[in-house]
Image 1 (cartoon, helix red, strand yellow):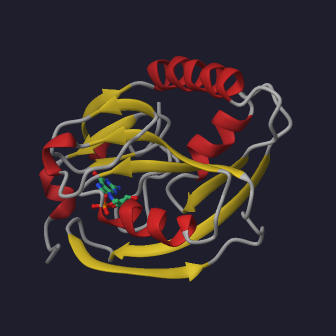
Image 2: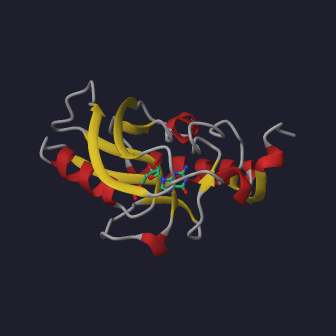
Image 3: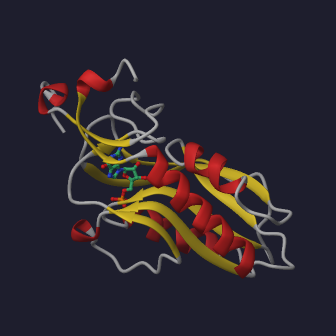
Length: 185
Ligand code: 5GP
């Protein structure tokens, strides 16, 4: 049992459920990209955990790269500001690119990113997101590979943080309200 559990109000999705879903997505990706060498693009830092598990469930020669984008501060609400903090190392022109994201909330971050990456003329560009909050969506997004839909609650664990912490929780959890007290966001 994690020493962080006293801060957790509820486990929304267990590590076992995540594991089986990620393996299912990996199998679909392996099937859909058969004969290709896809480039998985993880969005730092939240997608690091799902990226690490997903790539080991893909039975194809694939490559990975990462981008860092700012859309949130340390609070829990969107600032609406999207900036590329770290760009890709790889040239994606003519590549089959699969974006790997932890969670899609309003969709603003990914829609900005899609536009920016499409301008580089990849052979294809698809989205894989572990989580989605459909009730919060402000822009239409075509998410080809989705793990789970979650309610409009701030979740942590399996890569997702609150103020930098809780990324190493193995389950997707909701924190107790008192953990947020003092948060201006
Ligand atoms: P969007 O642009 O879709 O509103 O925001 C997406 C980003 O917001 C995610 O990549 C993630 O960094 C952050 N985010 C949105 N909802 C949550 C949440 O419930 N928990 C955490 N930890 N981050 C979230």
